[in-house]
Every structure is written in structure tokens, then in C-alpha cells.
Amino acid sequence: MAKELRKWLGNLGTGPLYIEPGSPWENGYCESFNGKLRDECLNGEIFYSLREAQIVIEKWRVEYNTKRPHSALGYRPPAPMACEIGGQNGDGGLSSPSASMLTRLSWPGNQGSLT
Image (cartoon, rainbow, N blue to C red; front, side, top):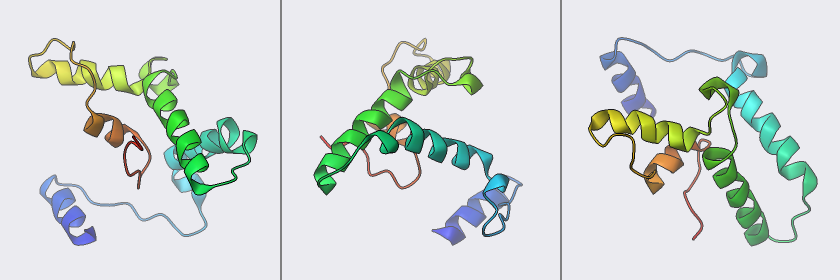
């Protein structure tokens, strides 16, 4: 997969950035998200099973992507913003977000909905 990613980036005329191990300040977006996940979800829960953790975290992820305002998007949630961007393809922005779109808006490694 890494080779394909490098090839794709090369075709776009760009390349990956190297982040020094142990340097979280070099990846502010990821660190900001990790802090929000911990502060808003994980710190307030005690999980007694993997399934319980999956359900609680999935509920938080859906809230984060569809309802929670994000300052970088003018205090709008990402999923409706993605619909607006998708609307530039002729649907007027009125379509609802697809499952794949919401998955792309979530964190890396997400396996999609648990339903």
C-alpha cells in the first residue's frame, strides 16, 4: 500500500512528509483529533467489553462527523460539508452522505459502521 501511495502522490506532483518519531507536534491534525477523542469520549467511560467500546466509540464518531461543529469548516459538521462539496457534481448538494463518505471523514483505520 505504501508503494501505491507514493506512486499516487508522485502523479500528483507531491510527496509524503516525514514526521520524526516522537514528534507529535509535527502532525497537529492527528494530535488534535486524538485529544478530542480522549477528552470527549474515552476519559468519561469505563469499558467492560470490546463490544461496548466499539458501540460507544462508534456513537461518538457519528456525532463527531455529522453533528459536532468544526472550527476549520466555519463551525459546520464535516458530513454536511462533504455533501455540499459533492453537490458540485450536479446534485445541488441535496444528497445525503453515503457510508463511504462518512468513513472517509473518520479517523484512519476505521472499519466503518458497526451496524
